[in-house]
Image 1 (cartoon, helix red, strand yellow):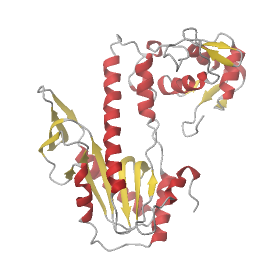
Image 2: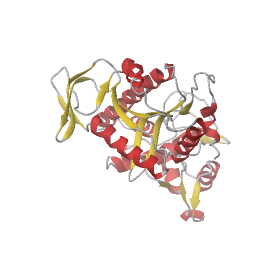
Image 3: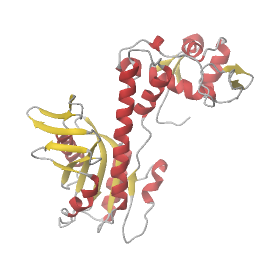
Length: 339
C-alpha cells in the first residue's frame, strides 16, 4: 500500500532502537484561518466582533494546548514500536476528530486535549463540563470525558471494520495546571501533560497484537482515511450577511485594504508596495467567509475589480474547479490543494 508523499515524514525514524515515527503532524486549521480573516475584515464596532474574536482566541488556546501535548509525546522514549498522529479526522458510523492518537503493537490511546481555565466540574447526567472563572462567571461546555469515550467507541468501530483487533483507551488532558478540577469524571482519567509518560507506562505489560509490518499497514490506512475538516463559511455558520465584511485586496505590508490592480501586479496606494499574487489570499478568504462558490461578479465585488476579463484571468490563475462558461461560470475551491 503506497503512502501519500505529503506524509513522507512518517518514515523519518530517529533510530531503529526507539522506533520513533510521527504518523501525522498537525495541519493548519482552516477554522482558525477563517476566524482570523473574519476579525480582520470586521469592524471592531460591529456587534459580531466580540463573538468572532472570542472564538478565535479560544481556538488559538486550544491549538496551543494540543501542541504542548504533542511535544510531551515527542520526548517520550517508548520501549515498543509505535506511531503518533495529531489532528486526525476519521469516519465510522459518524465522523469523529481525534486531537492526538498513540498506537502501538499492543494498545492505542486517544488524547482529548482541553485548554479551559478556571475551576472545572465534570457532570455525568447529563454529561457536561461546568467552568467557574475567578470572577465567578459560570460557563457550560460539552463534556470532554463523554467526547473521548465516544471517540474510543468510534475508533474501535473503525478498526473492526478493517479487521484490526487492538485495545483502545481514552484520556482527557488538561493542557495547563491553571485548570483546577473540582469534580473529576467517574469513568475517564484526567491528566496534566507531565503525567502522560507515567500514565502510558501502565499499558506496557499488555501483549503485542501484531508485528511491525501490520503496524505500517494500519498507519497507511489511517493516513489515507484522514479527512481534513473544512468548516462552513463564516456567513453560514453565524447567519450573517456578506456585507458586514470589508472588501478589497489586503496589503500584507501595511495591513490596509484597497490594493489597486496594475499591469501584472497589485499596488498599495498607502505604502506603494507591490504584490503580484496579492489576490490569491483574498479569493481564498472569500471561500472561507462568504460561500462555497464564486462567480466573476463575486470576484469583482470582493476584490474591487471593475473589468470582467481581469477577474476571469485572476480566477483562472488560481486553477479553481469550475462549472459553466462565460458569465455563468461558477468556481469552487479545493482546500486540500495548495495554491
